[in-house]
Amino acid sequence: MVEKKRILLIDDEKDLCFFLKTNLENTGEFDVLVSTRGDKGIELAQREKPDLILLDILMPGMSGDEVAEILLENPATAKIPIIFLTAMVTKEEIGDVMLKKKGGRNFIAKPITTKEVVAAIKKVLET
Image (cartoon, rainbow, N blue to C red; front, top):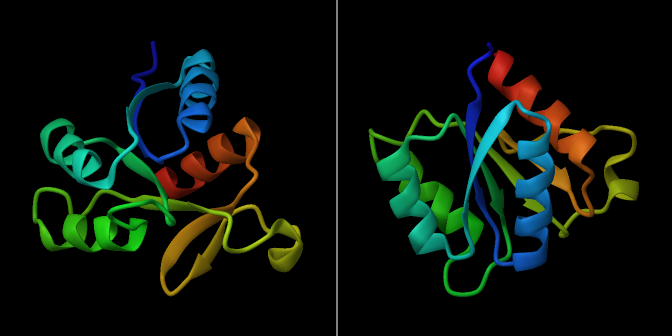
């Protein structure tokens, strides 16, 4: 039996969190932790040490960039890969590229599909 990867999803869109968590867990490959707030997501990351974090950029209170900076400054969470989920860039703007690197960071343009997210997670975790 393959060990499931633990994913932390930090996004203020509750519907997206519900569906993405459900769909990722239904693949049988992932256990998904969810936080709809940046500060609580940081606490979860520090406590649970996920294999990867899916992080929305635009959130009220604390942006994804702020969350990422705090995680990168903490030795306990600095090495956890992050994939940003964003509506700031459209799929049309990035073309056929599913996982884009910008400023050394991985991101996926919303709207997203489970297939795209699974492929991106696998690509980032294989390196």
